Image (cartoon, rainbow, N blue to C red; front, top):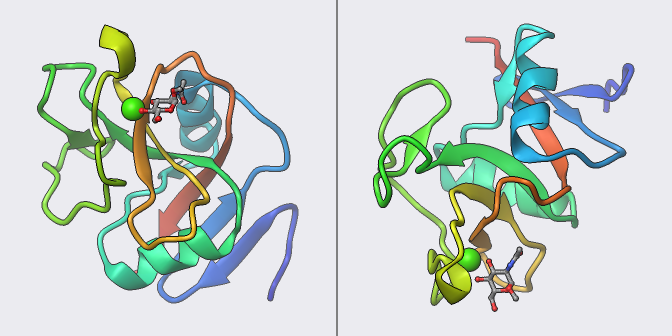
Length: 128
Ligand code: 2F8
Ligand code: CA
């Protein structure tokens, strides 16, 4: 619906769904250079929308500033979360400070991953 250079409207936001991969910071920069942000998931509906893309994508959540304190790229703290069971885990004591949504067959799809991992990403521009 309304496909335009990869941007599309859904509910009250305009989203960009990438067709290539970048690390978390480069994905974040891509979005901000276009007046958007890495997607901030703040409802089950939005979580479902992101899962419906059926691929693993970066979202705008990290604990790079303070380990264990998850914050959205707009500065707001994490309220409702959709971690896969066992996550976040800093897997094998690696520094996993950035969050991806894995395309698992379950609603809870978030995983903390190393920020230099290359993933697709989703930008969001709120319209309301
Ligand atoms: O088993 C969960 C585990 O899977 C991967 O590590 C094997 C993920 N690593 C990356 O995506 C880089 C871990 O983050 C994840 O916890
Ligand atoms: Ca992890």
